[in-house]
Image (cartoon, rainbow, N blue to C red; front, side, top):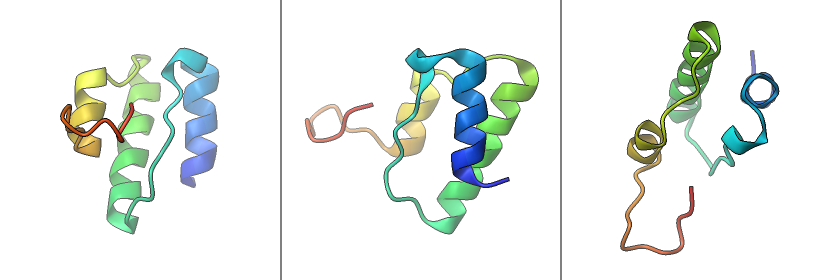
Length: 67
């Protein structure tokens, strides 16, 4: 399943509040995100904000990155 399709399923399941705007990801990064989304859907629990921050490498000192 491609990233856009799994993101659509994820948002349909958990609502717009859990929409993830993705940055440009490497093929490996995309596969990791697909795995995270698939797991979240299968256990019926959205990905935590902490986990997303870790994945995207959010730096609170860089205001250009918004999650």
